[in-house]
Length: 539
Image (cartoon, rainbow, N blue to C red; front, top):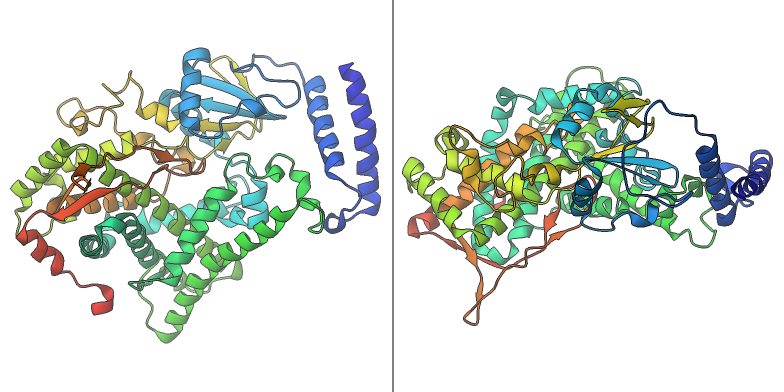
């Protein structure tokens, strides 16, 4: 019966494809209906299932799926890091599932992720093709979506970023900037503590835009900050699992816009316009400043000044700068907001960190990055925030050729996801992993540094890891030095924060659900230090 279905599907699929090939162009596909598209996909999946070659090794274990669609109906719509982790106890640390004909391998142990994504990075560093985000909206031009095996663009872009921020020496040029913008953050928080999340986003945008484009943001309603944040929100939506059928049936991208049920194509156009503006407008700002001779040193201006820049090189520079903006903003915003939540919930940790700062720095000045080596407990707080906060599984990789690992066959084209949350909450690695305990990173036998699983693997490791780490330390230490962070009190009642992390995308950190807390200056001296800061609009 199954072969009969294949034959019927094959006949209809062949007929439709023949008509399409001879009479219909991609821009005017009238004959190809959604039903036809579905028939073709089912036919291809069935054909692949029946005609697949015999393997020398078995596939990795995983939950049993349905014919044709595989595990499509079983995929979690939220909190996927928890669902994937739970499967580890059932089938092991390699979890293999399929969606239609697309295989997906979830890695639930750090040694596995290291073995595949780092030691075999030459074949495990590709990215899947995302139709909505990558092809239709245009995210494919960014470094995050780039395919390393396609020419030198991936390597060249990473080399550009490493030159800017890949070493401690390179990062030192940005220390004064990060300290200045963070001190301005303190003043904004003191004025309107209830808007701390908005202040975090503004400060992250200020630092990133200054580094990427030499741009000084406006104190209120800055157009570039608002545009970047809008694109990040749209990015989360376009990569939400199951949000767009075209990611499951790529052939739908050829359906004409007037066809019923294709409103998503208008959405893609609008998002593409926002994305292109976020890439082009800051870049044009730099070019205008360079023409006037007033450009501030930045990633973009430095590379544009290198001599004759070809149109392709300029295209790559502006998209690399855009990648810096997007990646830096999302990571730091999530982590700093998670820090304020952690300090609200753990006053004992806050007091110990403040005592260390007071002993080393005193209360006559704000701490700086130069105090870092003398503040081991604050450093431990940074690491524990990064470990304890619920990370997403991590950006997906794609294997470009067949592989066999630990006796299991991993087919070419398999999407591979490292469940970083599982690594960082593994009882075999961390004692009481669900508890917030910075002390685990202090002493003669500190536990595993969470950065081994936080910023990617192999050739895909985040090039901005030093930038993010430095920015987080400065933000945490300055905030702790002048503020007491505690649970909010309303009408005499203590408000318990609702510890919920919102679903984002497979690429990003999860953000805490907005919560109420009290943020007040620690002393009159702290108020003086905060008030001494000048905002950009006052200079």
